[in-house]
Image (cartoon, rainbow, N blue to C red; front, side, top):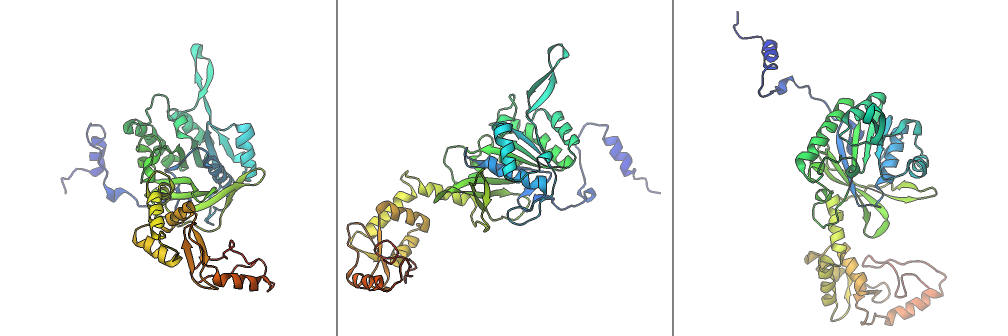
Length: 393
């Protein structure tokens, strides 16, 4: 007979003593990650949405809320599990903003619940209402008990609900508040989406620009960034930052339009990450950076006369200048593009350099009598248009 002590008896004895708590991984059952939005927002975990004020974060979370409340598919076509949603919101009025937006997005408002205040015992034992914070963990627990089908909790913005006793710039204090919320999410199963503002300072890593401690991005399992397209300010880009639970995914784009206004998704994915968008912002700034460098390059390249667009683009690529930055530099200098002869290569030149017109004049005149009004002809260099602005007369 073995003299080895019974394993369960040893564990029971250890539970009564101070010391390390060891868990053998052989006793842990592996399981797949469960998703609210497959590959993007995990269930039972904290995710982070970062963006500047006015970028459309609340519109985005409203669209997500509407989809969860009805079980309508996500914009990328993936399935969305139906359930209740708890909105922890401070910046928008429920009467004139939150409810009308939910209606505009087709939400089932019977499954959407706003958590803004909690009742506490005040002086003399009387119940008083106070603003909810994440320090009110028992209240959040009770809310989840009342809504057992909750699939999504939105906290918008985190700065309003972190709690007055917490310094949002200290890692240990932020983790002390968020870790219990993460445990609550794992226990009850909803996805927790925390909305954070983005700091104004520049940087090269998008995840580092969330206001407050890096613990926000550290404890989140997925981080998403909402920003405007630098070339089209109406267009919003939802781009990935870190994702600990899935492969790197594509971004998505939408604008906000209609009456009443609502999110309108584009059908095609966006092959860009949040860091790429941040780099594009830096290139587009007038701070003596990449745009200034590209402008100086283009001015020198065209200083002695016109060159084909193909030549200029190849030289810019060799110089490490992106096509996006080159286009901005071209617009800044007012570079004139025109074909060199009928269907000849398109050439670029500075405004003070005359565009070739000896062959074009005759051809444009001929085309004007051909009946082909308003058409655009392709050029060998991949450009379209005409010397007069891109269309036949």
